[in-house]
Length: 329
Image 1 (cartoon, one colour):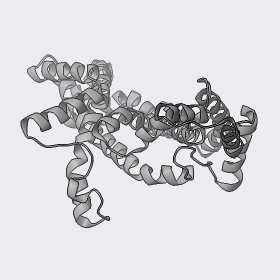
Image 2: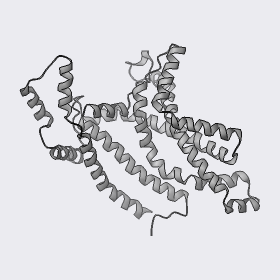
Image 3: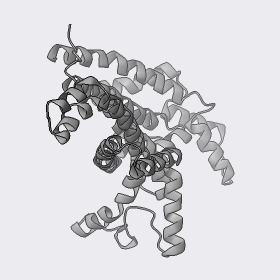
């Protein structure tokens, strides 16, 4: 196992290098650059820049250099100094912008995953062991509704209901009195009273997906001969279900659990925009639309790194959960 993990870690280095190249190139594929967007925005506001000012800005940001030079400058800064570059739009170091929002992003994503697992796995086991019951049909129906309803639509419905029925503006993570206040115990309490809304919205799709997958696999396992043999030998039903078929039915879950964090972080982008939550999702969306290449590149690289590491974690969990799988030899 240790040899396998070391080999996979070494493979991660060239993988991330290739991903960084592709990400940096894709970000710059749309015509123009940040300066083009900035000049167009000024023109809409009635202001204009002369050619000399534009050239000075190009030299300042390095936008007059070939793309491979810009990429080399960006990667060398990350590897040698831990510097992800300067955000053109925010005029601040990219690392500062990311770290300011990363904590809240991870908190929402991790709590979403925890809520998803707590609901999905027991529900899947119940409906699989009570096939064709009323709850089986009801949960299956709710599962299809959850899969077919986008998260941002649920967020819009929630805001509309809260405003039209209760007269409450439910956007944001803080009440108005805490918006500009320094961090305190009361502010944390206020945030925790609101943070469950984006968590539940994001958990709907993920819960429905895991529930359907685990239910289908568990139904397949329950019909196999080893289950009938265990029953014939008098093994208690609860122990039998959870120790053997559930463990094997969770293989697809373990194989994708490493990607779940990145999936949730990506899914929260539009939900965070609708609910006005300052996470990394809206920051990435804004960086892509304004072609802020260093900020967008750093965020994409961060998500790619988490995906590669998550894949390794999934493989290790799968080998631990299923003794039939061996990573060596």
